[in-house]
Amino acid sequence: MRMAVSPSLTRLVIYATGVFLLLIVMGAILARARLVSDFKAAAGEGAAGSTGYLVEGIKYGLAPSNPTQIDSVTFTLTPASGSQAPRQVMLSNDCGARWTKCTPLRGPGWTCPVQVPLRDLTSLRVVAAQ
Image 1 (spheres, rainbow, N blue to C red):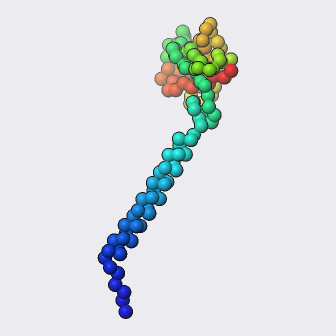
Image 2: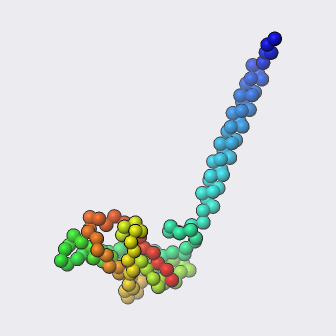
Image 3: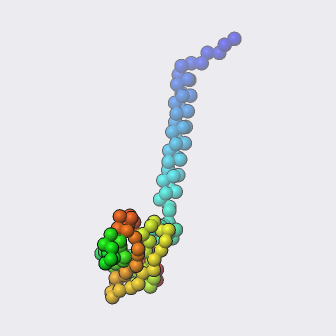
């Protein structure tokens, strides 16, 4: 003996299953959004908040003996609200593989010695600490 299922009951089951799946997907999306918005790194690449510095006036110096070679990078660092002037500054021109210690100039300026062909300079990273 075969039981007949009414078409309205079939539609109700399909509708309820669809609503249930929609709620699961929405919950997952909201959970992911909450996770992303709770990330605490406020600046830079670190895992903690930073008051930060504004890097401006970036200039590079060419080697006198080979004008296709960069031998220095200079810039100014302006402390953000609540920050003090940095005591140590380092620069990387190869995505963080190697770091060069910079020396302070008069005022907020810094200079960093580098040896890189001009065509190979694709990024600059500055790290400043008090």
